[in-house]
Length: 69
Image (cartoon, rainbow, N blue to C red; front, top):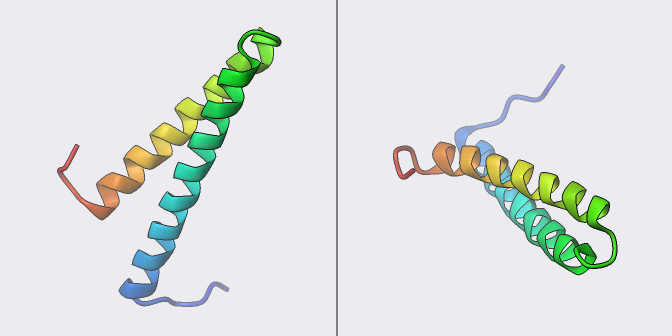
């Protein structure tokens, strides 16, 4: 069974998840840009991952700051 966490810990975990998603989004964006000329298929895959991380960031932003988007 999962541990019970308080709201402060939950907020910290969401903020860490948001920071991680932001790092991954930036990394996949850079990777996609570098692959665009040499490997279009891999660049498309990287772009799909960028879009997925953007969606995650949007959801986490809405949790942390409701109504901002």
